[in-house]
Image 1: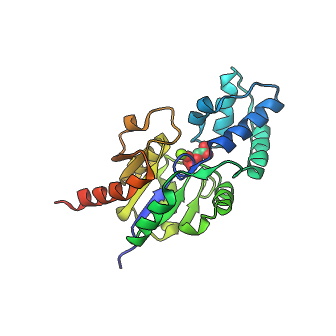
Image 2: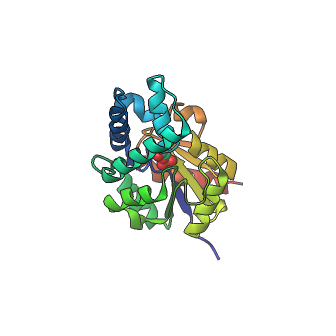
Image 3: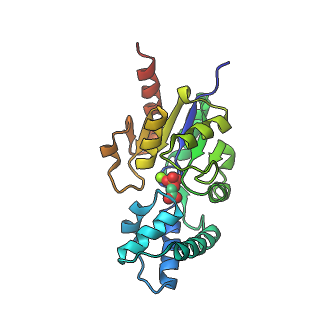
Length: 228
Ligand SMILES: O=C(O)COP(=O)(O)O
Ligand SMILES: [Mg+2]
């Protein structure tokens, strides 16, 4: 039996431009703590390792480090606020729907492997009308491990009914390139996402600057893999 080819997507900064709502939630919490807001351009690159890390990084801008208990409380406040505003301004990156239609027509299926919490990821994709696009939607809490641990990618693929030998990862940051490398699958980097290290420096197998280029990047990877 041939299992379907699977494209596994990161969520924040890859499928959806979530920075405006994530940073609004961060600044809501900072404001309640009496701290100044972090500007969007600066805070964008703090996204990628989950809500807790985003808060830690946001607090560090002001030179603040806090205890575990306080961080727990602020993370809860952050998630409460974010959940209520998850799709106020977040939108899929340009060209995504067309690229997915094209690839689906070629027989690909899709999955989401994110360091966001699963229920937040589902809520976001629900509100954008995209949940049904994905055979599996898995977050940092789904299997108790986050990217770049390869287990999350292996388990996401298992849940989607795919397999590692016919999967490609698509992501915007270090954890995405890392998880793909550790699981031994190719990775396409997107240049429009959130990362403190430029994605090109992480050397993904292909780089795209717009979703219109995704089908061709996928084809060239498959072509390269089947060339003797
Ligand atoms: O929410 C985050 O910080 C990370 O999410 P991502 O893995 O979808 O980029
Ligand atoms: Mg990301």
